[in-house]
Length: 105
Image (cartoon, helix red, strand yellow):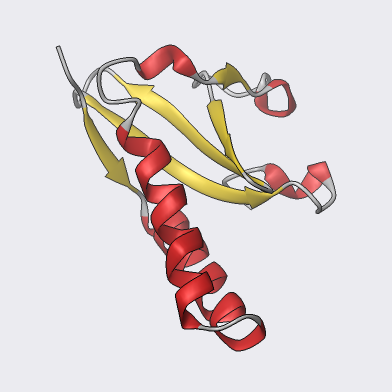
């Protein structure tokens, strides 16, 4: 059974930030390509939601957070079985301090 992929507001905001930053620094075509790549990576998990590795930095949380990697970005998600969907909670630049990965901060 395929699950829907649902983007939480924080993750959408991060995607917009990535687009804005790269559109200024590298051009709109590069920015759009990067954002499309991140979004496309999430589509692959619809049929295989556990494809991502467990995020150890968030192991203290009740939810089991997982991630996929696209270029320098971790796409953080968890499987919300109650709602029947995969929730994308954050896009994290792996060049940042791992302490910043917490989706609630």
